Amino acid sequence: MTHKPTQRKSLTRTISNYASKLTAGAVLSSMSIAALANTAPDASIHSVLHGVSVVNGAINKFWEGSGSPYIDLSARGSVDADGDALSYAWYVDGRFVSGDDALNWKIAPGHYDVMLRVDDGQASSEALIEVDYTGGQPYSLMTDVLVNASSIENNTLVPFNAVDNNPNTRWGSAHTDSAWLELAFPSRVHVNEVSLDWEAAFAQIYAIQMSDDGEQWHNIFTTNAGHIGEQTHSGIRGEGHFLRILGQQRGTQWGYSLWEADVKGYALNDFPVEPVSPEPVVNLLDNGNFDLGLTHWDVVAAAGADALFFLSEGSANITVMNPGTETWSLQLYQTRSLTAGKTYTLDFDIKNDGINMPFWVVIEHGGSPWTKYTVKQFQQLTLANTLKHYELSWVQGATDSNVKIGLHFGQTPSSSIAIDNMRLYEAQ
Image 1 (cartoon, rainbow, N blue to C red):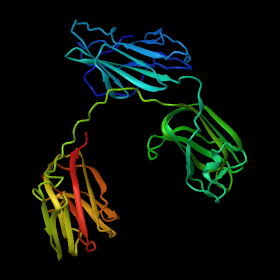
Image 2 (image 1 turned 45 degrees about the horizontal axis):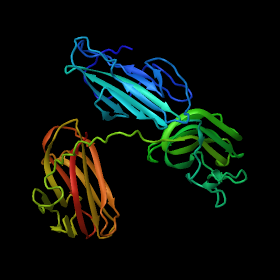
Image 3 (image 1 turned 90 degrees about the horizontal axis):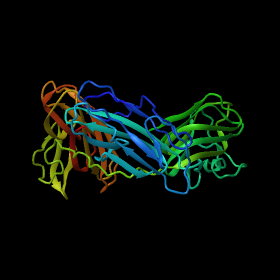
Image 4 (image 1 turned 90 degrees about the vertical axis):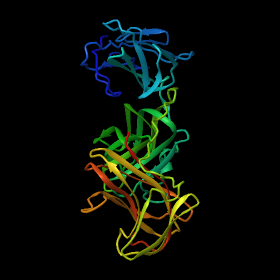
């Protein structure tokens, strides 16, 4: 397989050309990335799967036997027309794992995107191979699964009824179109099949979604043909720690009701990679941990405000006697130079003495006309002696050498406030 040369560029995850497929066990695909420099090397991946040669396009089938399957990946087929010495870099799921001309590992069930970057010192070329290995026939993933739901119709139709392996118990939701049943697996899983046994209160339109964190969801299956009884959706593919059945339109005037849900697939094991240390975050603020007290920090008490600013137990403390008449009456800030179009994040820890107290993060020009680049109000509900973490990100609207990075506490109840670990940094 010939790969066109490319400029140096960040790892791309898009797979545009499937070069080989291992059905029923492993799927390999590869692509080349278009190029500009004629002197770039020609990247090529060869592989050996469980002792069977799989070289850029050959198709083989296998299931796991008694031995431990392994994959050898080789970069030795890569060439450079100019005869330059080549260096190699292997990445798995975006993480650097090796600089050798070959890569070998015992394969665990899972899906892996493996990229080879070949460099001749002037330009580089990349090839990508996708490995999807099931490790045998899919099995039920319902052991030790935790279940939750957006609502219940009554106290007898609880979410657990849908996963208790009892065909005579069911979960029932409130009578609304938007409702969900969520499964949390003990570890990350690869899903191949989902079976749903709907009671008379079925979902006409629904989606099956997956997530790694229980917050960001993506669809792995959707249908507008739901019906009473069992529906088995096989041949689907998804990975994550959580699975959700999201009802979008009811088939009746009732809510949604499931006798039983079953999910088949296999548990995933992470690829054994060498950890890559992230680039250290550079704090653009001085003395953000307040080790030097309030050095480098400016304070404001105006418009009738009265407060003490001091260091206590390693944190910046503000004792508010009078909060003033404006939200900007009390301020703690530094001035910095920011660049238009860059994304910045401000994060910090804060607590008060248990009072329900609002405060504001204000990023503004430090003088007339006091241009506001971003403003966000937070409602401080933290109990005494418990620091809570906050953060705010924004895209800077203009290059400005006089930007106030500040916290405003005006118009708040009289209280005692502690602030620590303030950081301002650019997005990586």
